[in-house]
Amino acid sequence: MANERGIIKLSRKQLYDEIWRLSVAGVARKYHLNYPRLMAACKEEDIPYPASGYWTRKNMGKDVSKEVVPLKGDENKLVALQTDDSVKKRKTETVEVSSQKTPVPEAIPENTTQENPPMRDVDDKAGTAIVPAEQPEEKYMDFVESDVLSFLEKEEREKVLAAAFALDVNKDSRLHKALVQYKKKLAEYAAELKKTQSKGYYNPRAHKPQNEPEFFKEVSEKGTERMMAILDALFKAIEKLGGSVQEDLSVRIRSDIVQFKVAESQDKIPHELTKQEAQALIKYKDELKHNSWASKPQIRKYDHVYNGNLRITIGVNYIRDSAKGKLEDRLGDILIELYEKSEENRIERERREAEQCKREEEARRREELRKRKETEIKRTKELANKAEDYRIAAEIRALIFAMIEKGDEEATPEWIEWAKEKADWYDPTVAREDEYLGKRDHGKDKSEKDPDKLIETRSWYW
Image 1: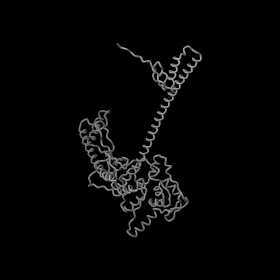
Image 2: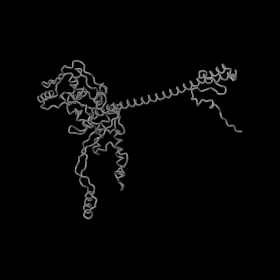
Image 3: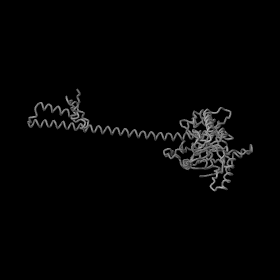
Image 4: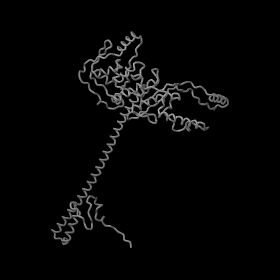
């Protein structure tokens, strides 16, 4: 690697290895490179990089070895890459000359690394808010040229990115119907809870009404109003893009449901005694003077109060209010994160469906094998039974011949004819139908077709 005057030179092989180890965005962060320019350099130098969903599948433990695209061509050829620092320096100098303002540093898009922590803030990734304070058109083009949402077809991807950049909270618009219905549920539950609490024997654990709405359970009343305005903008954008909103406020994006949670942070503050608690303490101290067994009232030391900082959790990632901006300023990030999660869900759903198909196919194969085995056993038994009948027929014919040769008096012409008919009745190759015994079912077991079984027992009633 060579580095001179803000230019980093890496061989095609080194750049290829690092991209498949860290991801394109990871390499951009490591060497302070501009993400879109790095992508353009990879395309120009014919350096393959992981397709969309590669890191997701890899982090989920799937075998992605077949997705690795080998590097072709001259591995030692150097690729010159301009560092972000040098670009910023030139921009700073230009701005100082013209307007004496410090330029806003460029940000690279959200990065997917090999590591997948249990929970992470989207701010921890390489990206920042999708709608920047300055140069929105330039930022939009950076995202269009990056691999954000690259799993979408070009036309759909451009629509989603355009919607993400245009997203804004409109407090004057009519609230989305799903949120209106949810507000109704909250009001009905609050009325039922108030009614229950008015009873003298109320116990929160035993008498709390059932079917409590869960979605805004971790958000204050004021935070709920603000969160509904945020969701209103998101829901309407998702529906315009062809998605839908479910009754539980989850969303269907493309073909998969994406569930997310909302919450509000709380501050831990010392508990202030209520009037009732203060009286209980005084009573306890008085009782303690006369009775050592007096029971001390249970009073908590701290209170947890909502502080207005909201967050939306999508899968293992969350986007929250921070010094960088409020959720209202990051609607585009939230929309993109929902689409990213829908792709993860699609991959997982297809994996489950494939496994289910595999199980069903295996069950079908076992059932087919069982039926074939059952049929084969039946046919083999029938064959053996027929062979047994054929043997008896051959023995009868041999007996007839022997008795004729011996001149046995019993071997009269009538008896010989009768015996031959019985041999033909036994013989499955002749299968003669007997006047009295009927037609023999040669495939049945001997016990089932014994002549004694053919005797019909009748009861006569006069």
